[in-house]
Length: 358
Image (cartoon, rainbow, N blue to C red; front, side, top):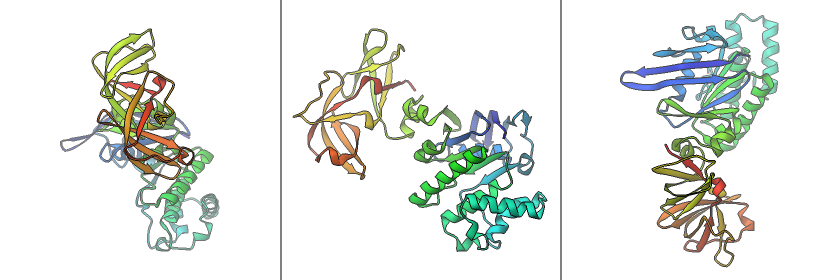
């Protein structure tokens, strides 16, 4: 196992700064996900770590060794790509064996390692087949086996599940996480899928326009977003503009907003000028007029605009002073039927509102 350290990395393509001073620390055995929209620089950063790109500026270290100028095969990295990149004229066995042959691994050891990883990934019965005879999920398992069988120091995965159907994607990501934990391989995973990142990661680095906006555990990224971009990109969220109206003691502030005054537990932070108040739809409590909330503060009156039924989840957009507030109700069968145009009350707990300034 090794750690990976990226220090002040820049990557310039012509006039485009694809990466702008990125620094990242990945500890031994961790799985860190680079999450962000298309064009944010996450694949460029992965390619620099792999050795496929040399950065315009900055250094890459595996443990204390500077590998910035080393080729991919000198870094002992395992690579898994979006398009699988399997050799079509080779059997599954030979595809998995490719990296071992290059490394002159003895035949008996090679055979043992291939069968062991094939067993872990449940592809033993596929070893004599060719890629065109496999499903997408099976091809992805073969690509993963080929990357892992070489015992890489670092495993790098670039959007490995984006070509798979939803159900298969869930199964394969579970296998990837299980395998990574079992083998304790330091891994860096690129995706634009928020759910995937939350499920699979020890830490998430949220990227935007060539920089890392926030690094933290899935819990930290979701519940305590550091910037407006992170809050908006990761999961569903409501964001309203606010301005300080009154401070209530050390930890509470009332903000004037587009939907009315909202009290927030701020933890003693001081705010001036315009801010953004962010709160998750699942933290908004919904009440009917015949059963209003007992709280007097942070209660908003609105009208249901749209309803989305998602099986285990009911997603409603409620118009409050011409602004839509999203509400999510889990296990909707127990909540009764709601209709567009229905009058409702919303209660937003002060502890569930985050104040963002950028």
